[in-house]
Amino acid sequence: MASKTPSAAGGVFLALAILIGALAGGVSGQPTIGVLAGAAVGIAVAVLIWLQDRKNTNR
Image 1 (cartoon, rainbow, N blue to C red):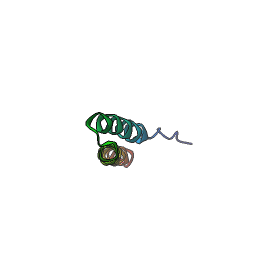
Image 2: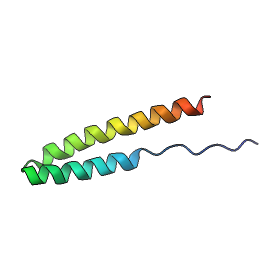
Image 3: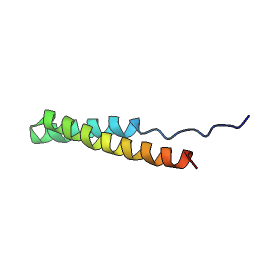
Image 4: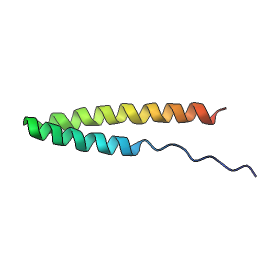
């Protein structure tokens, strides 16, 4: 039986981006916008990691 290689995890980048966005938004007086911007960046990074991992596992 072939061993399956572990997949890359992008969720940590989503969580960190949301936290950093909330902190940056809080400093500038707009925490909600910071959370939304952080979520958008985190989702983009997580999707890129997922696509890269998917490409590598199909080989």
